[in-house]
Every structure is written in structure tokens, then in C-alpha cells.
Image (cartoon, rainbow, N blue to C red; front, side, top):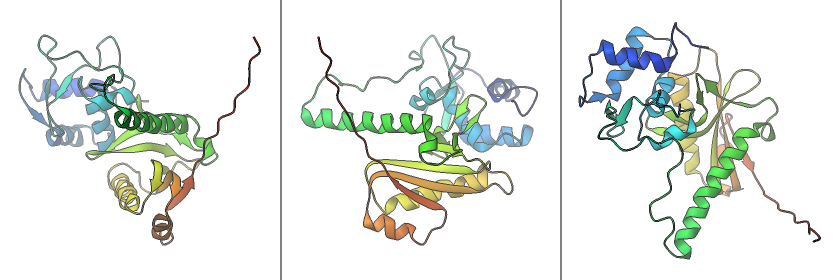
Amino acid sequence: MALYHKPVKHLFRDMIVDLDIQEGQVIKRDEIHSWFKTNYPLVKPGTVSAHLLKMSINAPSRIHYYVDPNGNDDLLFQIDSKKFRLYNPNSDPDPIYIRQEEEGEQEGGDDNNEIKSEFAYEKDLQNFLAKNLSLIEPGLSLYYEEEISGVEFPVGNRFIDILAIDDRNNYVVIELKVSRGYDKTVGQILRYIAWLKHNHAEKGQHVRGVIVAREISDDLRLACSEINDVELYEYSLSVSLRKIES
């Protein structure tokens, strides 16, 4: 449900008109956030950041949100992390609607294939857990707001692997490590928790973290022993085969 009379993606178009943004003119991220803060203060910074990606035709992370394949969400071109301009269909590349293949994906040796497999594995783990959050905790569900999901949720210039909501309507930040989880992960997840508390959570809404790794290192276990709001989980995968008689 929209917070105002229009959904946020339509308010973006109102912003372009209100600020009189012309073709080729650069608009900064801070200007966009400032416009929403002045005119629509109930729209949270994280929601604005997510829509910036969703409506930028060349932002790779837009694939994590629902993007209208008919082009109705194609509004901006991302110059860099802080600057944008209007999308020009006559000169800009084709909009991204699905994950683009990595350059040279068909080339390279075993090391290259191993890197690509690990990347795919991390995305597979992310997609699986996003659809099966009850494995972590009963009542846990993926965050959604106006076609924006909690997968790769933007916090500043970084992204939370999965942002979830528990059965008490509190936020749960989930960070995934396909191999070992080290103590530096603590600083990362605490930064995300703090950002949400200051920019996204409502008054009285709690924010906590979960780190999921194939192996929790001793230093990570020690670091989290003094932190009440971060929980640790190890995952394991199993495969079974059944012979099919011809």
C-alpha cells in the first residue's frame, strides 16, 4: 500500500517535473533524497535508494526488484553511485531486466570456473533462504514494500544480503558467507543494523542481525559472544541420488 496518493515510483516522475530535470542534466543522489525528505517525509531513505536502483536502466541490482518489462520503470541512467541522469532510449544501452552474463563467461580455465561457481553458489543460497526464512526462525518473512524486496536491500552505498521481518514486526539483517564467517563480518552487520535504526526503523522497532556461514570461525564466535543482537548459524547441504531404471 502506498504511503501517499501515489506509489513511490510515480513520485519519482513527479520529482523530475518539479525539479525541471532536462535531458543530459546530472542529478545527485543527495538531491533526490532531499526532495523526498521535504515533500514526502514518510518515504524512508532505504525505499528511495531501492527505487533509484529499480528505475535506473543500467543498475545491475535492479534485477532484485520487480521491474516492469514494458519499460514503465525505465527512468534514469546511473552515472556512478552518487550521480544520475534521465534515461535516453536513443543512445543508452538496453535496460537490464534479468541478470547479465559475466563478460568472458565461456572462457577461462578451472580457476575462473571455480570463482563463477562460488558466485552462483552464493546467489543460490541467498535465493533459497529468501524463500525459506522459517528455517532460520519461525515467523520470519522477507521484507516487502511497494515492489521492493529485502533481497540486496540498499543501506547507504552497500547492500544487505537479506532483510527480513520477524513475527513481532522487527527487522532482521541476514548476512551470508558461503565459506567461513570471520570476525570482520561483525563490523559489517553492525553497520547495517545501525543504518536501519537511524534511517529505516520506526520508533520502538528493534533491529537485530543473523550471520549464516558454512563454518563459523572461532574468532567470529568469540566476537559475537559479547553482542546480544547478532546470532550465528551454520548451514550444511546434502544431496541424495536415486537410480532410475530404464
